[in-house]
Image 1 (cartoon, one colour):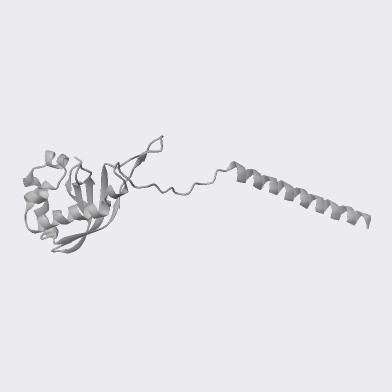
Image 2 (image 1 turned 45 degrees about the horizontal axis):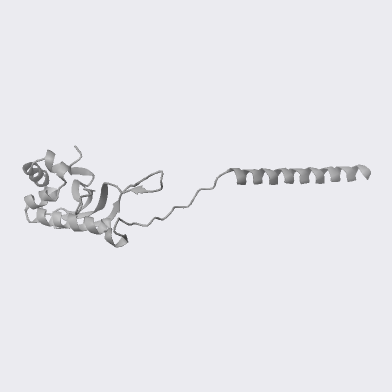
Length: 178
């Protein structure tokens, strides 16, 4: 009977020691591992205040809408004028016209509906942000062939963004980066 008490006490002591060790290990891990920080929301302001910063999607929709309207009315010179300076420096108006008329899929564009934009900003060591020089907008282009997936890349300008590139269905139609 005495041996059974010793065995029971040894088991209880072993379990208690194991519990203390596990608790110590858990406390060590909780304190030594840095928990991830949640995303931080920042105020979207410009030098003049929050009311001066236009929504990228709204501005992109206005520029892309005017662009497609010009293309649909065969006013290629007006559409070409909405392209970024870097595109116009490397590509003639004739090359622009040829790019848009080369594919029957792109014939008679009637409308564009942009649904999302994306831009990336750099965070500086002093916690300031550098606004992205370019941003992309995605949506659908309605043409003679039907609705086509479209991506516009915009270059921010002093007054309004200019179109740097247009990709339809993953195929670049006009590019201002090369």
